[in-house]
Length: 75
Figure (tube, rainbow, N blue to C red):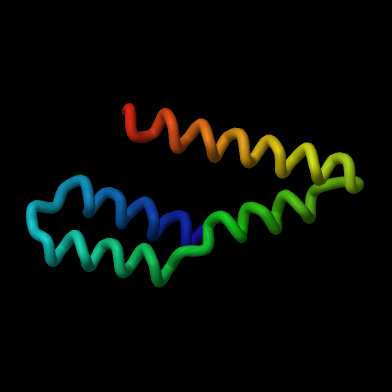
């Protein structure tokens, strides 16, 4: 949760910044606190009942991640 929160704060700073140094600082903080995807994948693996359920969970996660890459920049 700390990683997700620092990513949120970093994106807010990126949105509000007018300085290249603040931009770089926000990216550095986000990079140091990164780990969202691996954390989410480990949670998905832990809550899966069997191999078939785990595969379905990872497939859904990949689809949602891909949609985010397509829709996110448009927003």
